[in-house]
Amino acid sequence: MSSSAAQRAFWLRAFSLAQRIGSIALLIAIWQLAAESLHSRMLPSASAVFIELARLCADGTLPFNLGITLARVTAAFLVAMTVGTAIGIVMGRSRTLDVLFDSWLVLLLNLPALVIIVLAYVWFGLTEAAAIGAVAVNKIPAVAVTLREGARALDRNYSQMAQSFHVGRWRTLRHVILPQLYPYLFAAARSGLALVWKIVLIVELLGRSNGVGFEIQLYFQQFDVTGILAYTIAFVAVIQLIEWVLFQPLERRAGRWRP
Amino acid sequence: MAPVTPALLAEIREKRYARARGAASHEALAGLSLRIAAGELVALVGPSGCGKTTFLNIVAGLDRDYVGEVRLAPRPDGRPARVGYVFQEPRLLPWRTVYENIALVLPPDRADAVVKDMLTAVGLPGAQDLYPPQLSVGMSRRVAIARAFAIEPDLLLMDEPFVSLDHDTVEQLRELLLTLWRARPTTVLFVTHDLREALVLADRLVLLSAPPAHVVGEVEVSLARSQRHSGPEIELLRDEVLRHHRELIGSAATSAPK
Image (cartoon, rainbow over all chains, first blue to last red; front, side):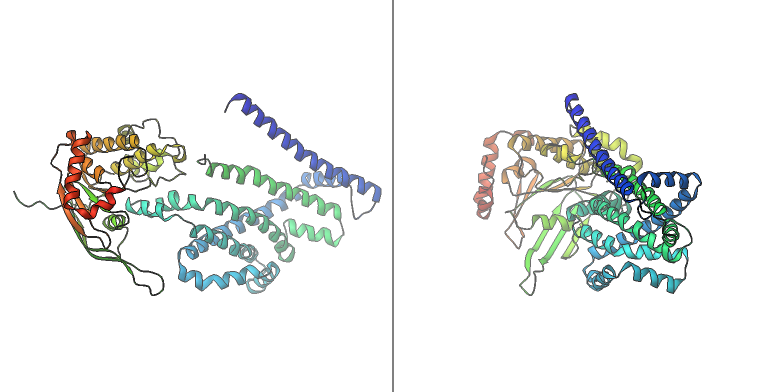
């Protein structure tokens, strides 16, 4: 790339970042104005929320609860991705198993998250495992459906190459199969994270005694909108951060061979 | 001389492809028998779509759904023969570098030296960090050939590896193949529908019929390889073969010089 082209790309990126920041600043400004003109306890001003956010960070309750929730999100996410990927690949490769389990998958896809959570707590008690399991079960069918598409699209030519050169099972999986599934894995991971963190809050609200969902329930009982919004902002920011520092760099790395 | 165990002995009595819903199955190979001596370069010539690729896939062990027998002579140390395969398309993994593509088929402890050695041998010493989409078609074929030779194959299968390339590239790749083969002698089964190409490269031609394919004739090429470059000798040989095997005329017409 020539230096002028590099410069142009840099300014384009800077400009799009400035647009984004401007858009968020506008939202905060509208919020602040609306709150000041309404003077209601139900809509605290942006400045009040940020002050509350700072206080909750300083006394340690927000980092603690956020950490607990993120740990649950991570556990449920990893379980859902691993199990869903395995099921998806198997169903994509075997017609018999696909026919056998397809209706189960459809049933699970249509099962409301709340039903799964309540049943998990009823059957397995108000435990950590039940909570994480319930979240994972909510996400597994969607991951399986996405990865099944990927497994169906695998190129036989590459598998034949690996087989004729006696590339072992593990190396074939790592170098031949998985790279073909990366686009599907990323699609499943993206939508997976978005769904999982929302369901984790409900699981916490219904049957856990800590975490962001539990805190929001406490604030709800006191009609404390300031606290609810402070937690919301912190959580949304952390999830977006994961997208920026984890997903996007990983995706760029996986796609670096594309011309 | 005592009879030498052939490097490859194949007797395919029958190979059928099932068709969807009750339609009669398609018979691809019937009574195809082939015997190749160690170190021989044999060209399998037949019309397009006659089942040559099917046969190679059976020999490579990719297709086990046939009636018959394939025997490969074991290596001198008693282990099973290694088979290298150059497919019709290069089949390089686009998401792995040239280096990683070749290293994939090698034991990790020897990979580094062999990959560098092979890339130099095919004239691409600087290409190891490129991804296949960055390579020209000719370079991709070179890498595919390097990968096949890298495993020190006892049998090298080549499935029309130079098809749909321009004339100069094909010339260079044929020359490269012969150079590599002289430096790293191995048994080669080279499939082509191009009679001229077969006559330039092979010790022996095995001619196949239209499907269901079987062997209809053999031609020993006694002319030294150094004599085969100039057009007239090859044309004479070709006319000679076509006089005896009129059924090849159809396929030979498709390979007229461009």
